[in-house]
Amino acid sequence: MSSSTPRHPTLALAAICLAALLFGLEISSVPIILPVLEARLHADFQDLQWIMNAYTIACTTVLMATGTLADRYGRRRVFALTVMAFGIASLLCGLAPSTAVLIASRFLQGMAGGAMFICSIAILSHQFPDGKARGRAFAIWGVVAGIGLGFGPVIGGVIVALASWHWVFLVHAPLTLLGLALIMAGVAESSDPQARQQKLDLAGIATLTVAVLGLTSLITQGEGLGWTSTAALGLAAATVFSLIAFVAVERLHPHPMFDFSVFKIRDFSGAILGCIGMNCSYWPFMIYLPLYFSAGLGYDTTTAGLALLFYTVPFLVMPPIAQWLLLRYQARFVIPAGLFLIGLGFALMKLGSSLTHLGNWTVLPGALIAGIGLGLTTTPATNMTTASVPANRAGMASGMDVSARLITLAINIAVMGLVLVAGILAALRTALGPALDAARLRALAERLAGGDVAGAQQMLATLAAPDAAGAILQAAVTHGFGWVMLYGGLGASLTAGLSLAVLGRRRASPAQDVLPGVARGH
Image: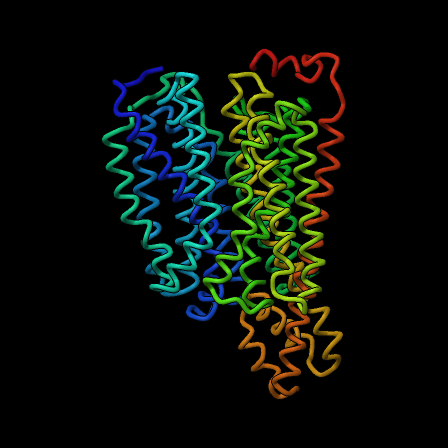
């Protein structure tokens, strides 16, 4: 390991935390402006899904390669380049004249953001080698990253209220300049000469990316293409082939980015189930909850951002409690309990959505409980993915953890969109009967799913009085989001049961769970 003379640790930590803040903001601040993007850029529901998904999918394409490149060519150098690229991509997003340009720019921003995030974690580990200082640095980093995710909706809402949607992206440009200055002043250069001897897993990166893109494209475009059409069947075949090719490539590669043998370690598998459970429920629903607040409950942008604090703030304050529970009761109880609370929160949100005649607050208690469940789950799951494998596999385990989170997030953003449209469509079909043909019914459902209530009311103006149309649409939105809440609750509950089954069995010896190759670090 080669390293330059250490620089100012406080400035280095500030640079790392700023990168984590920017990365989180681009996940959580964008959902709140989706209705605005729909109106200003004339984006349809599928466009809105891709505006969100392009970022998360792009992140998965660079996770493994970035770590290797940083080890080869210098972590500070690669970190600075990725921060610069994030700033340029943010400018492109903010200046995008159309949805197509915005989606492409979001993909570039996701690649830069994912690479920036991975570099920041690697630098944090090497900049603070001392145990006590490292623990304090990671704690500060975790809080700042949580602020980016938790307060992103509020920040996005305030920016839109004071300026325009463009500044939700443009604000990152000056912040990246500040980040570059902090990197140059505070971050010490480090590299790993042995990394030059390892080959990049390019085939694994390519096949996994094609598989994820294919699956999300099939979910979002399948209805429009026709599920039995040649195009849809070809897309499905390409997805399956890419997934099979990915598994084959990873089993043959000498340094795979996914070492499937580590799934034999029950602690690792249980932790990954925890990560998947959160991204089958809590995180993808954050994309749609602002739409529910606006289209379903009539909140304005600022009020929707404030209401989202019930959903996001609890997981910022729960990690210390989760750590205490982890020490007292062990992860095999804490992770399933956290997922169960997420599922309970979603069930209460579904119940609350049917009680809005009592007030527009009835979904908020369930949102609060879901946030508490996430706070209990995320810290133990994150810690266990790396702690359960040999030290020389910790980087690979961390990459698998982040990849599992982002891939399941991208897929479930698409699935929840499909469920939402299906639920709204079912309610409209029941309410309107033969008054609209199937194509117009679906167009109406997608308008509502995208938050365009005014446009949907105009479509119904010729069929019903304004009051009747409003009541029909309100009921349809409530019904559709009820399906999504049910989906999220089932996903969290199912993974809670699976994680309990995997983690709950006591082990006679830790060595039983580790394959010989894993134990030796081969």
